[in-house]
Amino acid sequence: MSTVRQRSDATGLHRVLDEATVLPQAARRLDTRPELWPDEVRIRVERLNLDAASFRQLEEEHNRDGDAVRSAVLAIVAERGKMQNPVTGSGGMLIGTVEEVGPESPLGLEVGQRVATLVSLTLTPLVITDGLAAWDGRSEQVPCEGYAVLFGRSIAAVLPDDLPTGLSLAVMDVCGAPALTARVVQQYVDRVSTGSTATPPVVAVIGGGGKSGSLSLAAAHAAGASRLIGIVPTDREAAVLESVGLADQVVVTDARDPIALRDSVAAAGGPADITVVCVDVPGCEGGAVLATADGGTVIFFSMATSFSAAALGAEGVAADVTMLVGNGYVPGHADFALDLLRSNAGVRRLFEDRLS
Image (cartoon, rainbow, N blue to C red; front, side):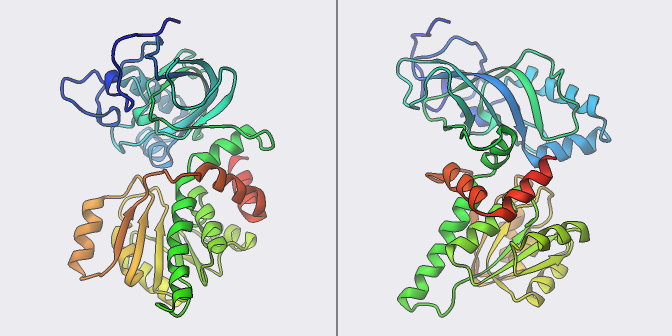
């Protein structure tokens, strides 16, 4: 392939086909030509990992018809030049092999390396060439042939040799959540050492039995949380989470019911100093706010979150809480999450059970 010599932008702005000046994530359609600008990298795609909120929405819209879900994903990518669910706005990430590296790429990648992209499919130029023939449309992980393009400010990590590919992909898809959770918990723990607070924080994780939730529980424990509360929607998930010992208390409740969530967390040792929202359904904002102590912090990692509902809801109940939007990137987040998987048998069991 030849390298395009006209001017590019490290954010990928040169790939936007919209008339308005918007970044690739906000664009309606991206340029997917395989020829690279000097700072780009082309990846031969092996597998996609769809965002949980996006996959759930597609399943529900198409009544769990795998063929219809597959056709919907193909249509989105063909129309937009990227995988961005038009309802949820979310995408996912991918793994593949580095096929070509532009001469000015700052990513440090080499041809032949197997990598996971740590930026969203919502801003990644993507072409699918096999019609997703090997995917039954019934799982978040999508075997795929095609190519994708990374920009100068994209992020990618070389896949580790000691973990199965599917397991690495599942962890890297949510690696921002545990890294930010650990950072916030550590900030609270540091206040104990300075005498500005008496005890380490109580941490509640809504969706504690899922991928990002289980990693967040493990990260909070490693950072020094005093009590961990895992919130799940079913008795089945509660039994699994209890069996792996990631939480001090497991609560079964509908996180969309703000009063039930508040009271359940309080009964389990709350209110929480830090509440982490990792569910892939909308409507959990009010309960997360009410379950959090005054002066506490709510971290939203769900792409199903309505940030206007969160902000206005907190104002409406006079809640003095700090609300953080997990943007999926913290320096070193991939290595941190993979190390949690390696060192925490409970986390690894949950991930392996989910993949099986």
